Amino acid sequence: MTTHPYGPGPLKGYGVGPVPMEAAFTSDFALAAGVGVQDIVDKQEVERRVMDERPGMYAKYMPSRIDVETGTHFTGGRYLFETWADVLDYERFTSQELEFEPGVRFWERPFFLGVERYVWRVAGAHHFTPLDDHHVSRFERFRYAYEGDAGAVLGRVWPALRDEAGARGLGGAWLLWQPEHRLVGLHTIASRDHGLEGAPSLGALLPTTLGAAPVFDRVSATLALWLPRSRRAGGAPSAYPMSPPLPLPTVAPQEV
Image (cartoon, rainbow, N blue to C red):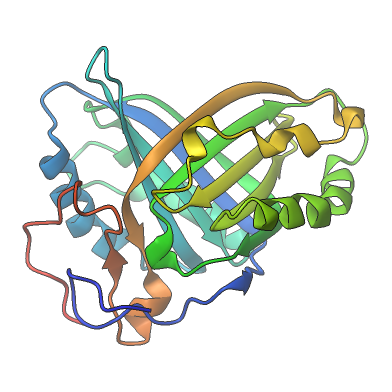
């Protein structure tokens, strides 16, 4: 991979091919008016240095989409974790312990609006291109009616969905499910020139057996990548593949 313009060293520890993770975490929310893009880029870079130390975190994609009519900035996170225990630990830590402002738990910050967050099991994840080509992503949630083992159904459909993602020139795809809320999650990743915004959804490949109906669909620029494996290997701990036009942090890079 190429040397990134922010932080020490190249990206290390991430390749292309299957990503053998068991669990995922996602969050989606709006930022309150007055929180600028540079503000949130700097804030997340500082806070990453605490949060990406949690066990089993593989990577985080931080999305950024600004509504052209209202100016509302939507962000959140799409994470992969090694094990189910790791993702439950992250949910517990961020919801019950983590405070960057004294007395304010992380998810209760007043400038986080309408937070939706889920822990997921992973039916499959695959990256077709290096992470520094992961400029944009699309996250979709589908609610399913199926009463049986949705995980088994998704495990069977994953090879066809993965192959179709590769045939479409995507940079990556994750297929997730959340049995408690009867949700399927689909995270697809692409370069800035791919045209992901107007592309047909890979959700069309979900079996009709599931009775899956779309409930969320958002295409976003990649505001930041958190890369704990690279940090531990002495490479860049984070990356900003959409800079420019999105800003780099103005805080000093982390020493690794």
